Image (tube, rainbow, N blue to C red):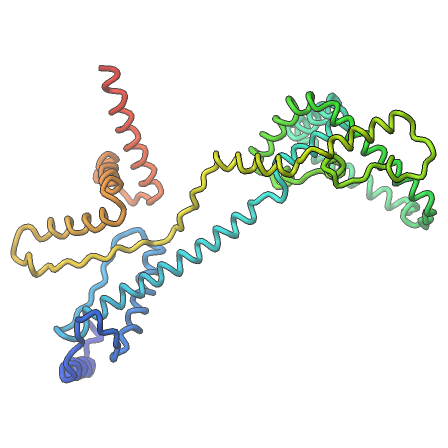
Length: 385
């Protein structure tokens, strides 16, 4: 017996029912959208409670509406459906927003080809053999664990420098004259232009062997630091892409020499290549091999089924009719083939023979594996026979 079912509560409930009957009851016509009894408050409360149970539980549960005839159970049922659909739409919108934020975080700030080119510039500038030697040392330090010891020794050296008085930090920095700054800038520009010409001449070397390896390693790597281009590579790419004026064309030096003229000619010739259009073409070409399907929002999906049990009252087909009605509604929503394969996977996984509470993720994996084995046997058996 319900302890809350006191005489006072029973009288109040009976008075409410009588009041509803006196006003003509709650009509079942769906076109009647008027909610004189504020059933939407109860509907929102029920949906909120059931959604909390669904989110944290994988077991089946039931919610019943028990009330006399004519008090608005059908009205309440429609309001619950409406509120449930509204909650689904809110959850889908929220999940899609989180997916968009996640994609923005994972989106690379620079294209993979651009980053790979900047790494090639660093390798050519340092030298192929020296770069390979440094890379081998780095891998060996990671394997042997010497990197931490090295960093610790560096910190100790920094501490010793500070203990010595920090003479270098305390010295006043003498400002450079304008002529000295111009000379330093010109030397840096000449160095970068020379490296740009070397990149042009060594195109068969890094274009066929180094660039593809770096490109693949960046695509496979999951470390964010591997997606950032190098500063030297940025400057070289600007020179070759046309966002740079060759030093030979505006410098005040009286004599450059034939090598400087050839270097400027090579840079101007390469700058005529439309790298931007080529990059856009390859980006569009890569989209043909990408999966354009968006991630489905992982929210609870509800299917509403109306089943009049009183029609089968007293018969032996009540439970069978209920299950048939449920599976028909599910097939109508997700497709006959998908649903029947799902039901077959449950039987193939022999979940009825399993004991204990198995997590839903493990159930899904076992069903997929059982269905895969069945399909493989169907394909292989005719060949072997």
